[in-house]
Length: 323
View 1 (cartoon, rainbow, N blue to C red):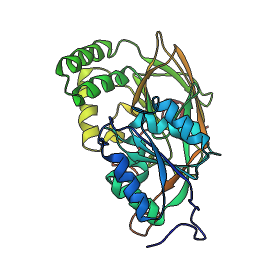
View 2 (cartoon, rainbow, N blue to C red):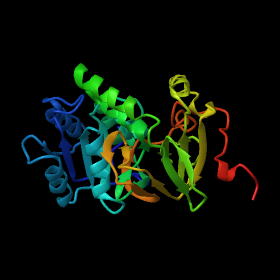
View 3 (cartoon, rainbow, N blue to C red):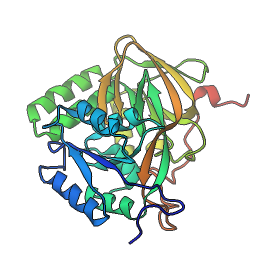
């Protein structure tokens, strides 16, 4: 078993853990399980839980103030994103393990592993991976952001996951009533304004159209004309063919601006938020440092998302003609 300190390996001595035992697939036994796995590698850690240590934000601040070499986060998408955001590019290595329901950032880094398997993998031969991301009005995201009325469907989805059928129905009805009522206006890198039902921004971590070091966000404008087209888009997405859909236009950008007639619903790495009537977006080339599995010949060529290998989508209107 390889231990830490090799030529290409980060040296790990001090470890802090934030485990939300009420989140997703974590559970009350997780703190002891984390300690046991760390002990297999000769490591000890303080484990903070929001239920006992003053809430999520307090736990993250306490853990980061200890200046660890590695901060392990076992919680939902919002906590994983907050830990990476607070650590920043000069902070400790972050290991956002899958402990929530969607686990967007953990799955982007570790694949579909369960959290104990992901933890053992990175303790065995993990390497530092610098993660690029995006920023929307000061809020960071590292996987994807969805701006526009379709983001409201996330609230209905979460209610369904919680088993609250009535809340899911009410939120779904609200999302359906808002569909096609307030299109976004957006501009990418100063190009002419365009309109769409929603604008999705994919980070290099998951985009199949860009390399990790290419230096852009992938921007997909989603603009179904009616409910029939929206249904078709949903079917294509489930089948892994969303880029082929004629209502989707794809470009890339370093900066973008978005306008709407009211507050803009948004989904950042699985977390629902509300923006103002205008929002600014920018690419962040070096957002935080993750402890990730070492690349292997087997996984180097694997697609980042289920959408790899699709036909090249149509370009946005502003890029459809040669300059």
